[in-house]
Length: 169
Image (cartoon, rainbow, N blue to C red; front, side):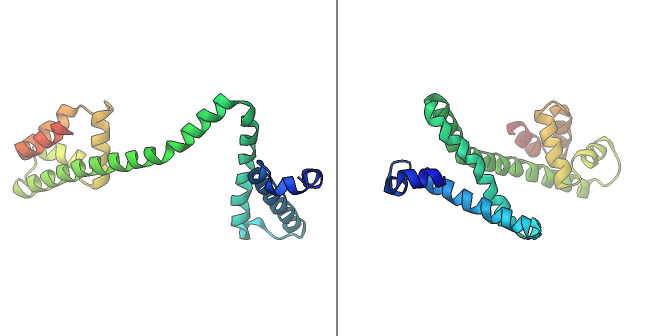
């Protein structure tokens, strides 16, 4: 970075590569600061921000991508799709939560009406005793961990509406 600064002169600060140059200069300064702190015996546990900024050194590899246009386009496409992926996952989790909460409501109503032990109470206690077990049961139903029919049958016996909601899920 120092050689490029000396050789480039004003072009270093204003040229088309100026953003990369600024990033390189910042990373070099942070590296010197990090080395000075480490050499002085100051533990890096106190400087978490510096460790985070060290991560950005890995971004420098993207500079090499300018020679590989197709790869650069692919990497930027993946990175730009991360935000829509995040919101898709949020939407999916909220949707599943609505179905899980519905199933828990049906299970609770059944247990209040019929507290005596029978086959349905046993199924409900196994699959719908808490939010986490109901969530896991729903996941198991869509990933072939538990037969969806078993969960449907327990919810249908509690009330046909809850069975129908589970079928929609």
